[in-house]
Image 1 (tube, rainbow, N blue to C red):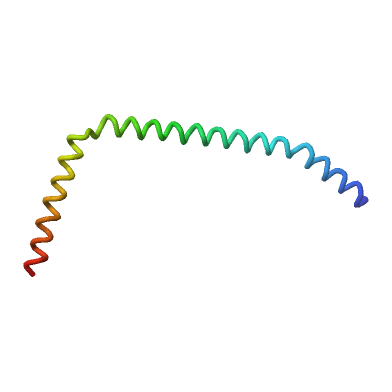
Image 2 (cartoon, rainbow, N blue to C red; image 1 turned 180 degrees about the vertical axis):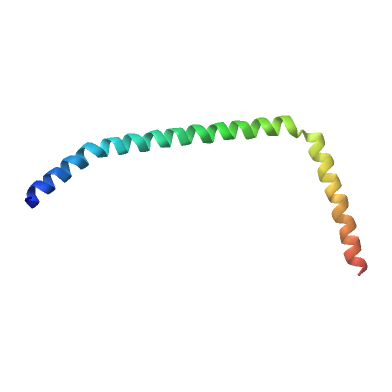
Length: 77
């Protein structure tokens, strides 16, 4: 087989395949963007439903008390 024929066949195959590759990459990019948006929406909904300000304030005050006790114990040693 001649090298020129091999090159022509190779280039024609590349010419047929590259649009498919580009379309596939575009599809993957759009689906990835949609998935990121969906995950962000879910995270926001979880934050709204499961933690309110009163619970967070209570948790922070409990943690402050624990750290204060820990500091007292460290200072005594």
